[in-house]
Image (cartoon, rainbow over all chains, first blue to last red; front, top):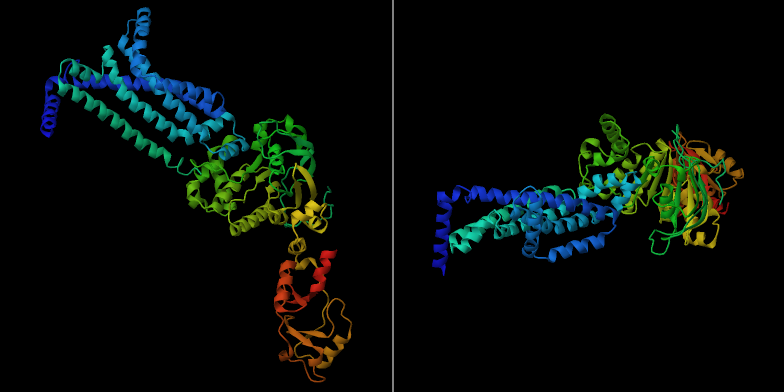
Length: 237
Length: 394
């Protein structure tokens, strides 16, 4: 048992040490970049959609319940199924448009949809969590709606909002692996190829890199959230 | 409801008051909440007028509409009917944002923004008004100084680093930032302990003496109301104004059974605490200076002394400071009056003492007559317990 693990570990180390795996389309730099770019683009897409929605329902209190419910239904749909559905749609889209990467588009859309629910929910929860007394003090001093949002609600909601972004980012990093199943790039390639070629070292190497990336994101966000949290949540009554 | 007569002495006199206030008038103001609408309490056909530069305390049990009334003045709550005038202008026709920026607002939980420094908090309204940085910074320091917080120490701190009392002061400073002629204060001292509360009350009166402005102040504490208010508006359940008058008038003549009960069974004592020794004319007292002939003492006791018990001579030193009482029986028939004759009196009443404290001093000394002295300790006359009781009957 332990011997087996050690053997696997040695094989994985050997894989990482092989210069062949550091060059070309299938090399680590390229796949890692693909993975990170995919995740960044998906997160930007999700933030552009989710944050304004969360701010709106949080600030006005309008459509909050229905929006949060709809968004959470989206959470229940597996990303794999989503991509299976999006793939043919993407083909249609690409055929009409300027020949883009079909798998990339399907993955991108699936990741955006995956990232939206935690960001919407946490943005809304962060804004709702702002003490009503503070909101009233702000209004009583003559702050307009957008001034209350910018000057009070967003700064105080930021830690909770960022927790949502962290959850979404980690999920996206892990799930973007699926893109490879549909022929896309990224670190998922190693896992798919590992399975296909029965190359455990390759499979493990891919999995380890995805996990490391996710942990890195988790830790990075944790540090950032603690920084912005110091004078917000901690001091809120 | 009566307006204080023009002759009502200002309870917080100052030498050169910088009057800077806006009158507030409510005309038949009613606020009903619709089913499902939430609010702090309805108001029913409320009419009242607060003259510029006065502190009017709205007091009453919870749910009596006092907070609703306050929030209608800066339009956080819109009345169902009726008109509200600030400085004789109907606020319904004014931009609520501009209106609020011109009115200071302090709430119970203070409402300091936790993510901003004390300096930034105080500068909120000036920032909204677009003041340039230099003016804002100078104003923040000036205000922190005014509320007794060292700007260098506090400017860059966060609210979480301050005590409850300090936060409360910052709240007042923030409300004063744009020098508003009207301040609305909703139970501002409700969350601090009694000792700190008393100090904050004193500071508010001190601030008001330096820069007179109109203040509407909500509390459920009748003692706080009587202490701070030039005028006190007593509310009862259902948002009805039970009485609006000076604290003295409310204590002397409660308008209804409700008001009498609300001000408490000890309203006699409360009235005593609103009046000071200097407000009463002391009764003349027969005095003799140490070293005078005994015969002179006998002669003075022969004159009738209305208002104080007969047969007692007050012995004073050369500077007219009281030494003690000498009963007529102990005055020698000849020779001089010596200091040893005097029975030291424990009841010395100073001008700024409240009548309540004066009564307490006399009871402690087990005497019925207290010696009134001026700020230098020189004899002015005497007051008896009966005189104190008379002021309550007046």
